[in-house]
Length: 105
Image (cartoon, rainbow, N blue to C red):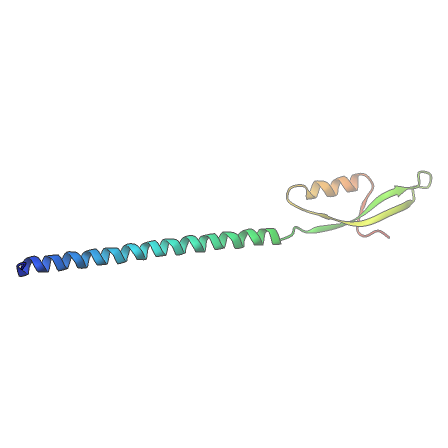
């Protein structure tokens, strides 16, 4: 039989070990929850980025013009995206070759 003093020390060590184990498990659980939440937020942010469409500009795209009278023979209304990459330059290119803003008449 252990002496009472050693028995108390053993119980204290067991209690400390149990407390440390609970603390470690809690910390790991909190870390896992943080990773899951962060991953979920990243996925939501990515979906939102794909869902948000850049503004559109309506253009009358002139396809065929009578060379003598310069009247539009064939045209169609299109929309051009004002994406941050190429949108503005795309609109300028259309306007530069005779297309115009707005729907075709």
